[in-house]
Length: 228
Image 1 (cartoon, rainbow, N blue to C red):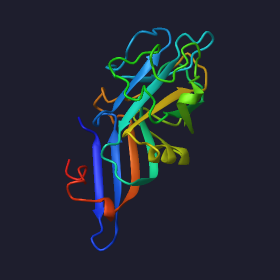
Image 2 (image 1 turned 135 degrees about the vertical axis):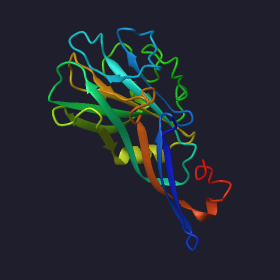
Image 3 (image 1 turned 120 degrees about the vertical axis):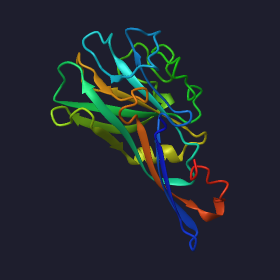
Image 4 (image 1 turned 180 degrees about the vertical axis):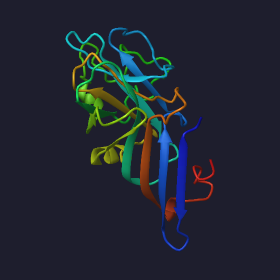
């Protein structure tokens, strides 16, 4: 299933066009997976769960989520960017409130084209393999955080994340690939389970973008996203 919805408003009498686009991890070269510290060589790219977990006290069961979006259909500057996940369920007893940190893998990083069927704890780009929520600081850009109030957000709910840093990060991209990495601050034996594209029945990780493209850069052949 291809989760991509694109809407263009073409202003014939003006010099710009406004666009709104939703790109999921099932679009183009998109991908989603989690990596598992206890099984550092295992790949979970085909799993129907996207799990984030920081597990005390030895942190052997820590898990980080990696999602990649293909921006090949995006033209012009973005004025709004929202990263949306679908909550699947909570496993076990959770903290009442959980904080999640979102990082972007720096543009041009050699690991940006990581393989969904090959990513592991040991080879995941920017991962600190002997840490819990740590990432290699020089390889990532911190984009912000969001909270989930566990007793107020039921399974199947959309969990949105927006920040000015995310907008700037998308606008700075030069190779049409954006990878976001997510970790959970709170330590708990329970994992937070989100929906990857492999599940199919609920919306996968999605990037919602709004922006404007100038008429001087448009052509009907160039607006490839319009008729996809």
